Length: 389
Ligand code: GTP
Ligand code: MN
Ligand code: MN
Image (cartoon, rainbow, N blue to C red; front, top):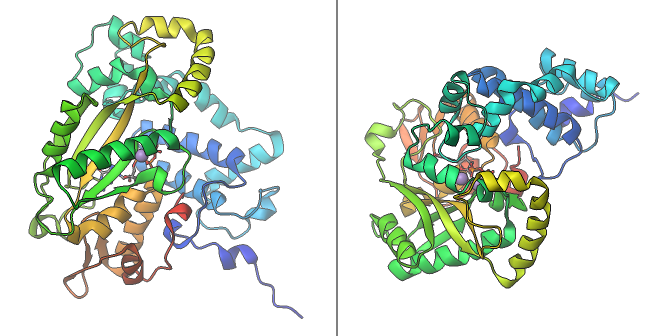
């Protein structure tokens, strides 16, 4: 007689960084719902609850089939009572009352709309919500004090709402490459974030830049942004200097997602190519139905314009930290979070986008490739296209 082996328990590991999560999966009807609850928990400053829902959603993304009954969930990790209740209701009734009422709630919609503006985080959005503001338009009408990033966010709001395509990301890659090589020949540029994981669209384009000769990368960002600015390619940029010191930022520092590389949050002015012009005109046909929306943002450039605004993140890393930076900037956010949790809880190590510190041996582990970092962590290597946790 065959032993009673539960395939779920066998196959589904409990940390997202132990699993392969493809971009396209079979359970969006459940994961979208759980992620709304995760998002809402984040808006209410409940991080623990938010991560619990995200972990539950992520397990369903890794399943090789569509969930048809609660039986399919037997012995899967990370599915708490609350997530199971939501899933059960969707399987039985087609939707969950809690999810639908969250989706419809004034607070959820307002915080989502306000944090959708570049430069606006949950704290600011929540303060504005409590002051009675509900949408980007309300900001303009009530004459809110905006910082420089938020001003750009409002000014280019319509463009920045439109997803960035892979084709546009490739055009921007060429521009960034040209800029970087103009100011530092021999520098290396790598496309990061969602596009490295194989996404077809993104909310921005992320790049990591380094130079094989350690030290050459110092002070590189202002040179890049100056070059781009001279070419009229930048609508907005804010550069932050590198502030990483191994002694201070190593094991003693509180775990935090933010790293200390020289980095630049920017908005590029992307000229429409012949190709993307065609797709642009399709977009403007759709926009006619929301014509009033376009009118209200009167400082937005006209629909007929031959360029669009695109969010771009640039990060410069010293060569010796490049593998860690690559791993840290590929995402997904949950995958990163799970990697750090695995390192700390299972290996007594501390992982950041700069380094891996082994607390048992009291030393930094050097790595030239992502593969080496996975090996130090005792994890099977997961390629970027399967880090869509
Ligand atoms: P879309 O841009 O929406 O397509 O998704 P994305 O996965 O590219 O997200 P995003 O551009 O926000 O971030 C890309 C990766 O960079 C993610 O893995 C983030 O965790 C990481 N990231 C973003 N900001 C920081 C930061 O300040 N420090 C570090 N270390 N990582 C960051
Ligand atoms: Mn991105
Ligand atoms: Mn980004």
